[in-house]
Amino acid sequence: MSASQQLRFLFLEPFFGGSHEDFALGLAQHSRHKIEILSLPARFWKWRMRGAALHFFYKAGKNLARYDGIIAGNLMSLSDFKALAGSACPPVLVYFHENQLTYPLAPGEAMDYQFGFTDITTALCADRILFNSHTHQNCFFEALDSFIRRMPEYRPKWAGKAIEKKSGVLYPGCRFEAGELLLPDRQGIPIVIWNHRWEFDKNPDEFFAALYAAQDRGIDFRVALLGENFQFVPKPFLAAKEKLKEKIVQYGFVDDRQQYFEWLKKGHIVISTAMQENFGISVVEAMRYGCLPLLPERLSYPEILPQQFAVDFLYMDFAEFVEKLCKLLISPRGHKETRKALSQAMVAHSWESRIGQYDAVLDELVSQRT
Image (cartoon, rainbow, N blue to C red; front, side, top):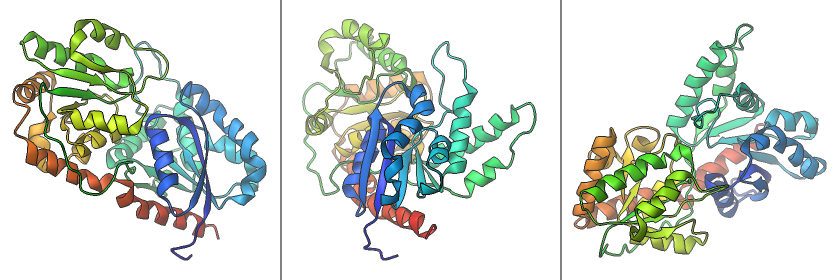
């Protein structure tokens, strides 16, 4: 297959929001191939996993012959889609942003084993699988082995090796420019950035608890709450609106990307307290635009943060988190070279830097079937 040949792909994204939306749009925009996106809004994820395949087949099932391949988000049952499509289905690449074997349960929620099985059958039916980090891939296979052992009998112990043979890791591209950036000097009262989803798995309770601790010490700061909120405002954010009051300079999602980037350029520190994070596009974006990171020493963060910055910007527990936060808030300036070095390191995650790898994977996906 010629390296310049343009192929046609259908991108099925059942949860078109957050990192899922960002990834689909970035890939479609930067690939040399023609990629058409068929999507559903980012809500009711459980219904998406069970029903999105039927919707997508109804919309596109009669036209599958026009595509060389399919790219699918992981929040759907690929086995259902392929069963409906039959021999008309072209080869499928599944991109795992997260998985239901390791995703933390909301308070009071019991595990529904069906969602784990959906991930397994989707992976088995895929022609190629990509995870968004090595951390995610490793956790998936560890959890898969444990999940299968919980079955009372007839355990499909073969499934892990079958999935692993066609799996790999490719970091998602990020939709920011790859050229040299002029980072503005951070002036005035330091601004703390929260640019994650307003959901329990991002652990906003711990985030706000640290800010309250800094406030109780008499340290002045401001906070910009920029992340997406899909259905309702969680209680920690409602409480913070009262407890932090004049310290909040932005309360709510900034849909315009240029305005969003302007907030990142104003920010001094980007914080994560996440319980679940398999890559961290929001943190990469913030570092690219000059924010200093303060991240837990777990999940994917030690993987995406260059090793030379780990001592200063990773924390082990809440006490260390508060101490490092207060230190940065008290002396927010004097990090010009560090900001510059972090920003330049994040260029590796731009779509301009990644797209060649993705196009090569898509070429290989199609050539294996021809």
